[in-house]
Image (tube, rainbow, N blue to C red; front, side, top):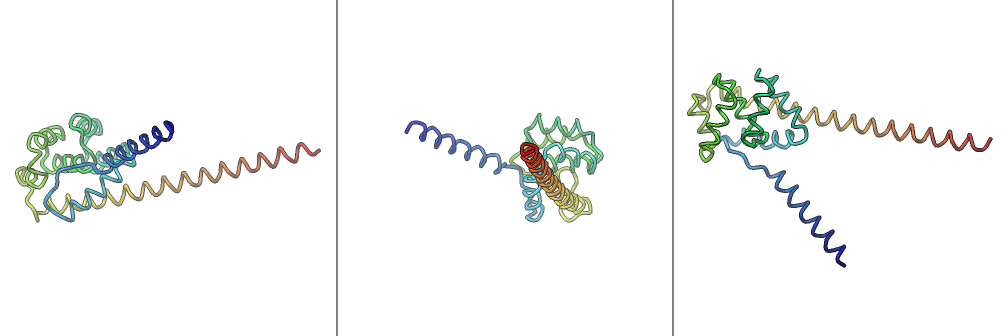
Length: 175
């Protein structure tokens, strides 16, 4: 009985941890479509954090260590890291400066931060940021699908190898 209680408690703790990790909170932008895309981007980033940072670095031409430092220093998840990097690129400021400013004024949200940095809703820069978010989310989803497909192919190849090996052992014994 004690084992079952311990197992049940362990499952509850695991579920609570998984739920808290998947329901990451981040500052909203005020734009429903962008917020939706950022939510999806956050989910994709959780599946491949290193790939996400590499993609941010490549897309916005910002060194990977600078983006990693923002993630570590401020505990940013996918959406916040995307917004800090995008705003840094658009305003030609260091990611750490943008992240620090956001952290000090977190209650305002990213939309207000963008306005204060000169990125107005509806502007070309704002639309470019939205486009980058959609493109990144699509890229991350595609990369995840490719990784999953690759893993399935590797598993099937392993199964075929094991099957051939076990058939070879059986035929070798009968001789």
